[in-house]
Length: 269
Image: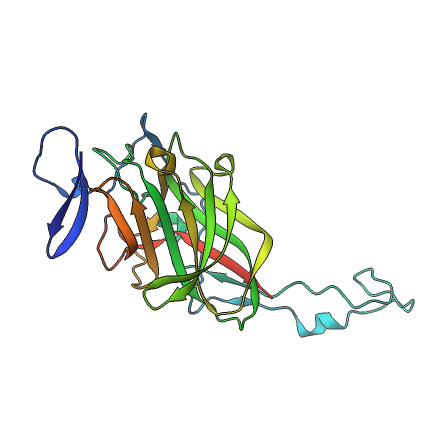
């Protein structure tokens, strides 16, 4: 059965099999574990997972050399870019946004029953909110994320983009379907095709598993060391004991595991 308990003035989602029993830290419904089983699969952290060194507030902005706008010519009117009379091709300016370190993203945050490898099921949304240094408008071109658990019955998911409101994700902006077959346990890169134009420097990005039951069990990971509040949000529409219909701050509510989502974004001019 799945249940909820109030601990130190906060609600915790708890799931257990069989008769009622006292809860230990590993019994918490949003919990930790390193196993795989029939109900779903979970992944271990690997050295190959990419890490980020940038943050939403202080992320480096990649810029080109000022001299690149005037490439040398060979006297024939052709620049070093190989164009004939046209302007040189200048790569876009990009900014990477992310708080988490993917090497620490080794636990899924989802509702489970009994052990971490047995998802309890329910439609899920997870959103990470950012404020870009780049002046809008700009294009969102890519999202990177770490997945540490997926139900064997998981269906296609949605990449969603929202405005960053006063109480979490605000007005819906856009979505893109992500086939289940494109997702893997570990690091995932999702390219937006076409890119989404954003007119505000504050926005939220993340994934949605819209189906009910085990068809919606998607375990995106969090980084327990990255703990900024008011930026990482979750919704779960499972059974009555696993029900978070409003956007819930993962860090503020001390869900277990707790931390900022392992979700990064890339924007460009």
